[in-house]
Image: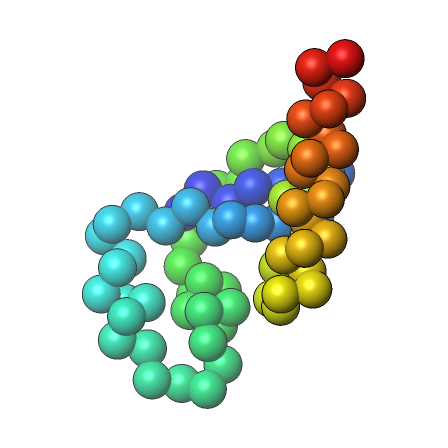
Length: 78
């Protein structure tokens, strides 16, 4: 499974090949996707983008990351 990495730290999103779909969907543990992903073979994919390390677990996180994305887009177009 390809897994984005920045400066050696794993980030988001995990790139799940379709072959793992049923494994993920059938998981009944309380540990969630993190535990399922830990059991799968990984292939790190290095990236320069530090934003892959950001979590988006709540509306507040979404709003913060949206502001960050808008700011980055403005910087790139300037």
